[in-house]
Image (cartoon, rainbow, N blue to C red; front, top):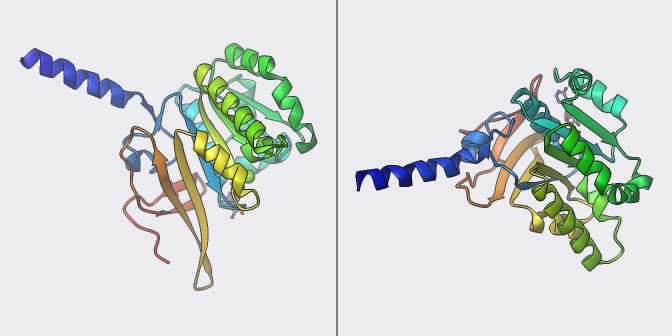
Length: 242
Ligand SMILES: Nc1ncnc2c1ncn2[C@@H]1O[C@H](COP(=O)(O)OP(=O)(O)O)[C@@H](O)[C@H]1O
Ligand SMILES: [Mg+2]
């Protein structure tokens, strides 16, 4: 009987081990240990809430932790992105030279190219043993479809591919202009995280909420966070009061 209990406890521990550190300071504390390996995370928020910084931090610290990353960007050219991120102490060029980071920048008018390059993406993921992917933004991908059904189908297919390729993926979701696309992205994800940037007596304050995380207990509070010289730091013991 004792042995059986031991086995059961080992199995449940193993389930917990299926988590990977998010790379975001404080987030693992409020999510039972980070992101579920191989899951799709939707990161939702308005412009300026910190989504791109969160995405890069997820990839950068993933690399520090032995997981190679792919950052697909429809928003910023590589040069500008690398320069901005250097201010947070993240030397992306160095990781690119070591073949630990792959950065793909598509101008917004070439988004359709992305969908034609599934094989290329899979080759990259294989070649560089990539296990963390960020799409910045998945909203722009969603805009590429002319009907709601086609969009749902296309995004679901992408999510299935990412899971089957063994990646843990962050789909960045711009919520303010396209609520329907935002909803499609959130509904296919295994976890949904919201970033806020709210006004309080003339001062903007940042907040983060884990809205959904399948299979995990998580905080239901909106926690304040700051963007420091090391990136996002969540105040896990506080609640955002406005
Ligand atoms: N080095 C930095 N130190 C502190 N705050 C920064 C730094 N770089 C950017 N920020 C803050 O982050 C904001 C942009 O975050 P970003 O991740 O680009 O937002 P989003 O992708 O949601 O539009 C900036 O408007 C600024 O307030
Ligand atoms: Mg951004």
